Image (cartoon, rainbow, N blue to C red; front, side, top):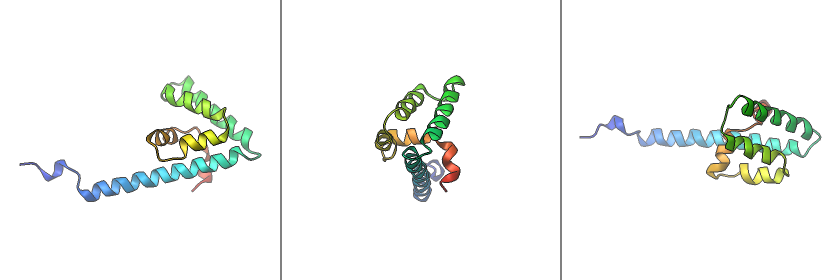
Length: 110
């Protein structure tokens, strides 16, 4: 006989999915805000701060080389590339959004 405690209840799975959806929506708002700033007079400041974050990741070995390389590439390209690669619902987009050099902008996005 299988214990009911070994499987999460349907309601806890639904709640977990809802929490994930809320997290990804907040990350999407952050990156949409970053896109706006990358097309504004704040562009250079935002890029410099994001590059400093990436440099810190690299120097201190804080995250995977994949994210370091991906974000370096995205920051040096047209903002439309970031929009295509980060602001969608693909698993890779979620991974990039979770490992974002734009977290310093989160206080601007609530």
